[in-house]
Image (tube, rainbow, N blue to C red; front, side, top):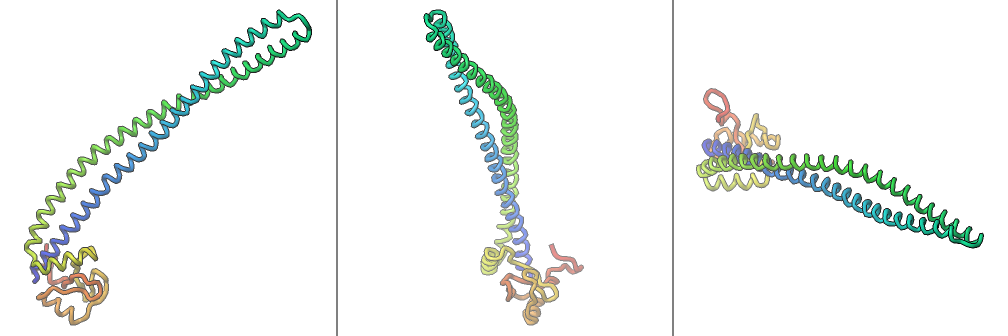
Length: 244
């Protein structure tokens, strides 16, 4: 039975390493997915900035068209002043000229403000485009590196599974079934007992059970955590060192 317990310990070490590698394998795409999500966010912000600039540029072109119309109206209004015949018509023409000049001046002032804002927006967008491109390259590099790491980990897992399967075949079917059921519930399925204390739950086991463990003639379970237990000194080599 000591041999079966040693096989179970080796099997558990293989399973623990496989589980560790499997967690690492799952973490790799999660990290890449987070980077892709971050990239998508900044790309969306950049697209929004471009759309806002495009809208501003459209407004500017519309205002430039309006300003041209106002300038034409101002020319007409000035020409009309020279053609008036009465003081009343003159005053009305002058008001029209002033109003048109005022509208043109306001439009020009707005256009200058918008043009300045557009220049600043273009500079910001150019800077952000550079940042986004750097992030794209970083994500692409991480994706390439992730593929390499995944391939390495999957290779290690495949190699470990070969050894694990070989060890599993050497374990008695009933013992292996019990081990698998405990591992599914508890994770850690095989633990030593040191000085009468189970290392799985840190609870003392009954003295009679401890005496049974010292004989090492059967597979026993901890009455507290239901893990497979063994006397720790049973696994020591003749020189007193832990086996394996």
